[in-house]
Every structure is written in C-alpha cells, then in structure tokens.
Image (cartoon, rainbow, N blue to C red; front, side, top):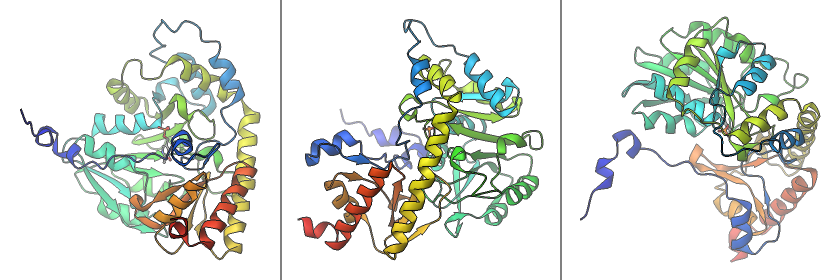
Length: 376
Ligand SMILES: *Cc1c(COP(=O)(O)O)cnc(C)c1O
C-alpha cells in the first residue's frame, strides 16, 4: 500500500516549515568529541533555574496524581504579581501553548494573521496549523513597523502578533507607539503582545518600554504572553501564561488540554516567582554580558542590532552558515537565522562571563581562518 500522506494533511499544515531548535549541547559534544560545549543558541538563562523554583519543585511528591488542572496556586501568584484578577490568567505548556490557543480559539480557515518580517517563527506556524492566512509586514530597522501593520488590517484580519522585545532581532517598541496602535486596531482583531523577554528590559536603560499586562482595562482585545523559559530559567519544564480580559481567557481555556501544565512545572514556577535575587542576578549578568559583547563587536568592526533581550544578532556582512558550523566544531553553539530572513547574522545568547569570553575567542579564531574552509 502506498498512501500519499501529504495529500491527507490539511493545506495549512502542508505549508508549515518545521521549527528549527538550537542544537543540544549533548549532540554537539557527541558529534565533535567536545567535553563541554557551551550553548548560546536558545536564549536560555546561563545561570540555570531559579534555586527557589527547584526547591519548590522538590516538594512535589505524589506524581501518581494529576496536576491541578486549574493551576490555582500558580494563577493566584501570577494574578498578584500583575495586580489582576485570576480570571484574566491562562496557563500554558510554555507560552508557545498560548500562542497556539489564540489561533485555535479565534482563527477560522482563511482568516488573516498579521506579524512582522523577522518575527518569532512560531507565529506563522500556529497560523498555518489552523488554516489561517499569514500576512507578513515589512520590517523597519529590523523591527516591527506598526504603520505597515495598520495598513494591512482588513475585515478578515483576526490576530496580530507582536513580540516586544522581538526574537531574533532584540528590537522593541515604546509605550506611546504601541498605545496609539492599540487604540486604532478595530474590535474584531485580537492583538497579542509577546513579552517573553520583558523581565530583561530594565527601566534604567529603556524607560519607555511598556508593561502591557497593565493595559487590559483599556483594551479588551489585548492578550499579553509571558514565560518561565527565559529569565526564570525553567525552559525545560515548559510553563508560560497569558493575561487578557476574562472573556478572551475563557475561550483560550476551552481549547487547552485539561492538564496542560504538569505538577513539577507549576510548583517550580510558583517558587521562581518569589526568587527576587535570582531574577536580579540574571538581569545583571545579562546587562554586563550584553555590554561586553557589544564592545567586542564594535572593537572588531562588526555591526549588531541593539537588543533589549538576552541575545544579540550580529551582522557578519556575509552568509554565516559556515561560521556557525566552524564555531560549533570549536564547542560554541550559536544560532544561524537565515530562516528568519537574516542569512548574514548569527544570534548569540548572552552567557556567563566565561561563556561570553569563550564565544569571542572562538569567533576571532573562526573569522581569522575564514570560516569552515580552514578546518576542512
Ligand atoms: C522563547 C520565546 C517564547 C517562549 O517560548 P516558551 O514556549 O514559553 O518556552 C515566546 N516568544 C518568543 C518571542 C520567544 O523568543
């Protein structure tokens, strides 16, 4: 029997380009025989998970029981953190889950979903999975161009995704421009502000950066997503959340699995939310490392996109696939972003001081020898 499986898949799913994750350190270690590769490829917290999160996780004993399907304690904690009602919170298996819920709950086949060029890869993926029509707007200085977005809104538009800051560019939008945009978006469009990196954005460096979780009262079509995968250091546990009007949250909750966030993840997230010192240290480490990498790039005549996140997109003014591979052979894993329309860039996650130095050393070595050719 020779079944044409492709013909059975839905048209939207057939068009999906699978998400490309960063290479796991273990795989690189095995392939290149490197004892301890460093991974600066997935914007994870180089300091590891919140110790208070781990401690809280270790109090979970009876894994024979289902998790709390309502995530009661975690939701209360999140609600208190943002001074919101618990009815505004939706928990996700990573914030990725929330991005999918919004498409499944609101996007009909043929409905338009708007996002910027160079925006997070999950937006087109979640759109296509439900038969939605991706509408990509041109970027402005690598970032999201809100005027371009305004111009493509139609009667068929249903969702707008905006990452603030955006991954992989690190670009960000200020409060005033986002506010006037939200005020103009028609009622039939849900605006998702993806704040996966919000905790890294410091008021001192970016005084105009908005905390959109505080805007729900003004915009009933607003959904803001946050994650425990980045500054809280719990990427492996998969937990994130959305905040929105209770009405939006109601529909998001209808499409999620009843037990989408596991017990360990819920407990760790509750603990992590109390861990101010881990949060502070993570932010400071990021700031110091970011400054170091920016200076190192400038000293070498390399351009980069100024970033409000925990990563830096560096412009090598030439295709970077061979640089990426040569660095990997030296035990430093970064992320090529040609699939984001940025073939001349590499995205580097800010690591510990040692990791950042190692990255620069390896980058120097690889650039000196001209990339992969020298290693062959
Ligand atoms: C990392 C990231 C996320 C978070 O994904 P999780 O599913 O919460 O791990 C969401 N949005 C953007 C832009 C990201 O870079």
